[in-house]
Figure 1 (spheres, rainbow, N blue to C red):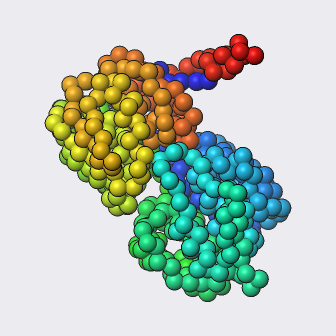
Figure 2: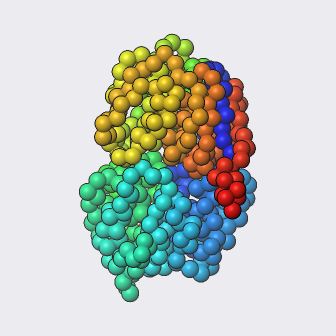
Figure 3: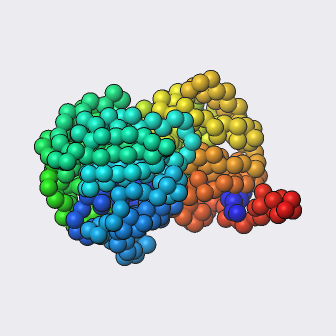
Length: 432
């Protein structure tokens, strides 16, 4: 068992390089299933979710080779199965992209319902309706999604998303890329990783237009060829380091980013009192004065991302005044609040609304990460707090942040990865 130990109340200085986007990588890697050739995918983040999805491809029969720590070569020409091992797929939400990819390539897929962080119900109704509109027969039996294309294959269709679902938009793109005819997705989600998936597929021979707008057109092609592609930088990882500097003070250059993708985050941090300078492929963020209250509502892109809500909340805990957060995406996003209260934060939650009354300082405490972004927020809070903060259950954080300890140490943070005994296992052995 391991935990993070942070001695906080130290400003951050220096520069940090952002890794490839988690939310793009976990869709682009399954998309390699559609390709009849060798894909070289660069700028992949070294995180547990990527390790898991690569392992799944291997289990299905793909030839997966690491060229270096950030580049993988994938050859799916000799896939032997369209059934994803349950014990692997249940560990991550993004396993549902395997349904669209396998259905588009082989006309069938058997994948268990998605796992990952518990942020509330994760219905895949929009995904299923899209597959059905393309002609597939879809049943959910015993916790597995069984999807089968008709004998003549999937066909194009016009699909209206009742809400702009990122996962359903990307899954529909995967299933439709090699279908017969034209597929139109209306009210499509517009996140940067959707554009990245479209660019990957197009670089392999697909015909997808409109990604990044609310109408995406996919003209199916018979074959996709191999090639090289580099994943975009991670918007949320960059935002997390920006939040850390805002909370602690200091001056940091965040490298390997697309500043435009950060506009929605930058605007709120500047409103809070940070200074942000946009460079060509970097942003410089600093904060010397006090923090001011802000109100935030999470929304689909280009609105403020739900994946940044907990990290911003950590900053608002020490901002002057009362801030109001309205969570517009997930009902269980506030599970971190109990942990923040251990540090002296004043937060009240009513449904999807949180009211944060800023306090002069937070105090270090023993915390447990409850999901990926909540865990990252606990790091931000610990860096700003007076005293020592210990964070356990860090496997959640490792799902989405590459070398976070080393990167923060490079900015002058006092953070360590520490081994500690598994008390539950010790008690079980004593009982036995």
